[in-house]
Length: 636
Image 1 (cartoon, rainbow, N blue to C red):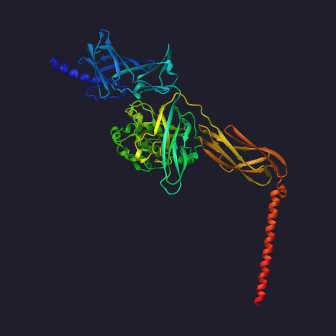
Image 2 (image 1 turned 45 degrees about the horizontal axis):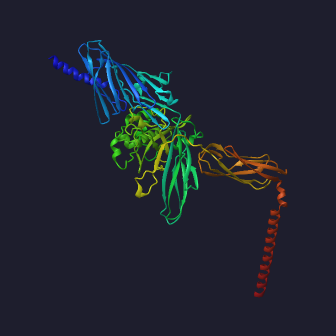
Image 3 (image 1 turned 180 degrees about the horizontal axis):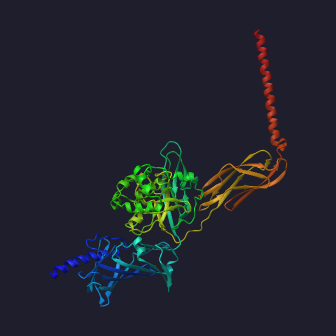
C-alpha cells in the first residue's frame, strides 16, 4: 500500500516541479490538477555574463513542503535550447545526480535529490548551475540580453534575479522592466529584479547607443510600352528611429522626393522597351526610441488622413468599431492584439503568404503572421480615432522562432510592424508580433536596434512597394535586399546647391517673380530647414511653402517669390541673399524707379517696334480701304 501511495505522490510531484520550470527561449504553462499551496518555492537566480556573452547561471532554490502527506525527491527543468553546458546540481550533502536530454531544441534537466522533502514545514535548499550562450547576444554594436517572463503562480513566494554584465558592454540603453537597483561591482555592472517584474514581462536589456547597418538594394524597372514613361522606386526613408546615408545610386534618378508618408521615391524616365537595373547602397543608423520628430507640423487635417478605412484596415466594420470602443489607448490595443492573436508558423511553409486583413484575422485569430498583427492594430487604432500606419522593412532576428520574419517580398523575407501617432513623440513604432512570439517581451515601450524601415504606408495599405518588390518575373526568388552590420556610420554630408534667378536691374513699383532652385548633393537628408530671401530694399513674398520638413539626398526643389521694392523712387544698389541650411548665395542688383523703364534700351526698342507695327498697320489699313473704295466705284 505504501509503495502505491509513494508512486502516486511521485507522479504528482513530477507535475509540481514541471510547474517551477523557467524557460529561457519560450514558456511552458502546466494545467494543475491539484490544490495550490502544497509546496512553496523561493528563487535567487544569478546570471554572470562574461565578455564573450556566455552566461554562467546559478539558481538557488528553496523548496518548502506545506503538507504532512506529500514529499518531493526529484526536480525537472526544461530549457528551450540545446546550447546548455556544464550542468551541475548540489545541496548541503554534496552533488546531486542529473540526467540531461536534448531534442526538438529543448533541453530537459532531471535532478534527483539526496534527501526527500518529507513533513510539513520541511525545507530543502539546493543549487543548479549551468552555462548558456543564448541569453546574451552581440548584434553589430549592440549587446542584447533576453529572458522571457516567469509564469505567474501563487506557489512561488519569491523570485529574485541578479544580472552582472561586463563594463565593456557599454552604457545600458534601455531595460524593460527597469531594475529595482543597479550598482558597479569591480569590472561588472549589476542589475537586480524582483518577482512582480518578472511575472509581468520578461527581462530585455540592451547595451550601446545605436546600431549601424550597411545596405545594398537591387531594383529592376521595365517599360513594355511603345512610348516613354516615368517609373519609380522606393528607397529607405529617414524617420524618427533611423538616419539614412546614401553612398551611391546607379544609375541616378532624375529626382528624389519625399511622399506624404515620408518615403523616399526615386524617379526614372524609361524609353520605349527600356529595361534598367538599379543598385542603391548606403548605411542606416538605428535607434531604439525616437531621437527626433521629423513630422513636427502634423496638423489635425493630417491626423484625419490616418484614421480612414483602407483595404485590409476595415475601420468601418461593426465588430472592429465595437472592439475599438473598448480599447481607447495604443497600449490597450497593443495588449489586446498581442494576447488575442496566435502566430501560425505553418503559414511560413507556403511560397506566397496571403494577407488576410484586420477583419478576417479578427474572426480567425489563430491564423496570424506579422501582417495580421500589424493590420489589426492599425484598424483598431484608426477606429478608436488614433492615427496609425504600417511599416515594412528588414528586421534582424537571432532566432526566427522568437522573432519571425514572415512578409514575403518575393525572394526577400521581410517583416512588418505598426506605428501610431503621439503628439509629443511623433510616429512611434511598436511590434506586437514579436511581443507575442517572444513570450511577452515588451515591444511597446521600446522597440530595439534591429528594425530597419524600407517603406511606410498610411495613405494606402498596399503602396508604395518596398525594396525587394522590383524584380524580373524570371528572377522572383532572387535576393535583392542585402543588409548587414557595419562598424561605423561614414561621415554624413548634406551639401545644398542653391541657384538664384533674378534680373540684374529691378524696377521699383513693378512686382516681379524670383525663382529659386535647391539641389541636395550630399549623402544624407536636410531636415527642418527653410528657404529664405532677403535684402535691404526689397520685400519678398513666398508663392510656395518654403518650410522643408525633409530634403532627401539627390532631391531637387523649385520655389517662387514675389519681389517688390520698399521705395518706389529711390535708386539703390542692393544684394539679394538666398539662404538654406547654413548655406548662402548672393547676387548684386540695381533698383531704379519704375519710370526709368521709359529710358531703358529694351523699353525704347520695344516702343520703336510697337510704333513701327502700328504705322505699318495703319498703312495697310488705308491701302486696303482705298482698294475697297476704288472697287465700289468701278461697280457703279
